[in-house]
Amino acid sequence: MPPATITLALAGDTMLGRSVADRLRQDPAIALVDGGVAEAAAGADLFVLNLECCISERGERFPDPRKPFFFRALPVAAERLAELGVDAVTLANNHALDYGPVALLDTLELLRAAGIAMVGAGADERGARAPIVLESRGFRLRVAAASDHPREYAAGADRPGVAFADLRQGDPPDWLLAAARPDRDADAVLITPHWGPNMRTEPLPYIRAASAELVRAGATVVAGHSAHVFQGVAGRVLFDLGDFLDDYAVNAELRNDLGLLWLVTLDGGGPTRVEALPLVLDFCHTRLARGSERQLVGRLLRERCAALGTEVRDEGDRLVVDASSAPARAPG
Image (cartoon, rainbow, N blue to C red; front, side):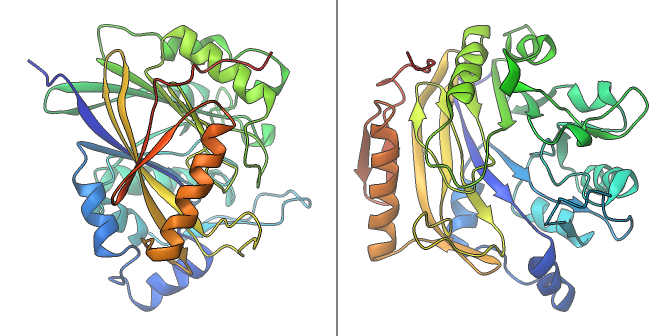
């Protein structure tokens, strides 16, 4: 018999290219997170994050003159993710194809060789859209992913790319709703969309509407990313997980250098407990928040959850979100 519940660690945008890659090139064993972060992640039954880069030493930049940033990690990055205990990554985002199809296919192969499952991108549309099932102690978690941008990165019938879903124009597509429906192959379902613009502290109306449809379809948890700042929680929906590791410039007002490692206890009916571990994203290294940093992370999470009708308690080293205090519904 599978356990009644499992704990799922969730992390948002994780970028291992550019300056992070430079550090790994100089020292492949350099610590990317501190011991406290690694220990917390290791305590979970499963660990899923958004990998916001490709992993390869090949490829050419995607030919889009409007695109300002291109992220490519070294092959050793896959091994470092495995060392952190990452069970699966979503590649449905706006950086998986930054260095073209050859680099994306390398990414799939390197992750597979490191023992990490991947979802949200593939050698063709069917592979990109296909859910995966993760298992821990007999508990089966289905994971499906989609990105609402850019359309140019969408996989085709015989073209590598990401699982694209035009959420801005209406309901989630049938293939994503079907993945959200409970079935005999899984005890719970995680849907992890890459949605919305950067640097927004609240979900846009179309995101709230899409999340409500995914929950209505049966998703146990919906965990989004893309904003580069964490957003609030409403019922089963963690609207944006925030950033986890990068070399990004810091917005002094929105504080994208503050993050959270989310620890969600779930059963087939939904999350029974949602904890958030406050983090600080130093340059190319992530550590536990301390003192005033931790207080600020707590204040921001309380404010962003309160805007969605959700309460947050401070329980020592963890912030605990009352996932039952607000339904996931569209505004109005």
